Image (cartoon, rainbow over all chains, first blue to last red; front, side, top):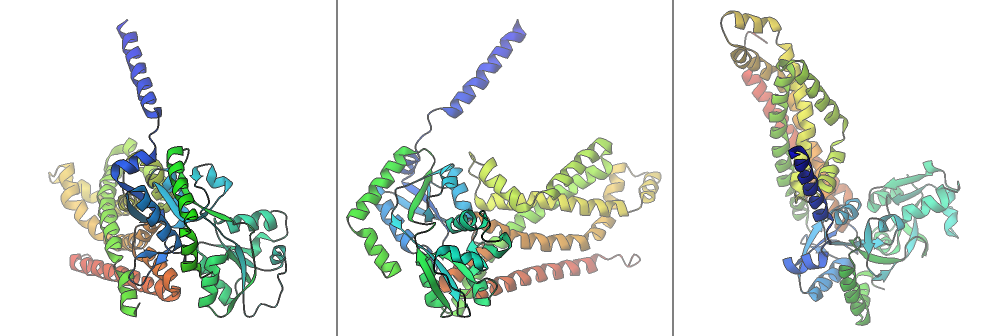
Length: 263
Length: 214
């Protein structure tokens, strides 16, 4: 009898622990308001969205936008720099409250995290160097050349889904780089013939490298960019979406675009 | 930004590189030495466990262990990126250092242990006073190799955003578009760190050499 009693007690204990774990999850918004601080991740190596200024401080379109969002939430802003690949995992595991780093909506990413409403819309571009003799009239034409892209980006997915998987572009002719600038170096050196990347940072790249030219730009893989939020946290999403809407209506985001993208 | 600022921005990451190394290398040495002693002198069961430990942790890339520790294991616990990185490098290094110390212990001939026992030393005393002093000397050359590897592997913590040398080179490279200069500066700093460390260990090795045992 005593044995069974102990067994029942043990089972109840385990069950209560499990219930304790799965009880109503607190919104990250409550955590942010309690700590009076929001922890935001970014990969500060993507000008003009997020990069370091002369003094080594973070600056850029996303940085200014997030600073204003935190101000309107009435909390302090703590930046955490992390390579782009690690950001979604960090939001998913609760190391970050949210992340702003020129994120496009992506079905795969949507499985583990949520997206805020879009705060801006971007385009893709194909870049070549001065020795390029081919022609890119429509996006699919790049399948005839050696192409470079930043791995894990929406451009990578677009190339893979639209050119590699249907067999138009041989896998061996697609080089995936950890970073866009590494791809740009290889483009300048002639190891790849076409680089596909986000149009806005490409304009900055081309401005700094006279050898590079944009041969095509348009809305292919990319489009709206969003803030990455913890999965299923509606309270936080509602608050962030509300502020983004407010900033769009006031023209704040358009001003930022002019400031950083000189449109 | 002038050249001096550029270099000093990257070089200030040395604090983290040295910090990670100073956690990973000694903790790996401590764990590795204890495990090696257990492996060699702890009997068959202990040897089997240690063999498993060594196989597992030498089989996992440090970066993978680092992600597991930071993103999966510490989901609830707030282990900082620095500590998650340092500890995973320490764990991986401990497996290698265990093999280094084990090799050194085994290269001291078993006859010496027997001789020491014959003149009345206990087993523990014989290991402490006869085998270990010789093994330490034998372990220094391969250990300086491991030290160089840990210094360079410390760059892996960049993946969690620890602002060490490599991450700083990336950031400043991106903002100034001077990538080559940024990565070259990082390479020079790493080289100097590794070069200095291996030179120091070579001096230690020389200092500890037993004259009759060249």
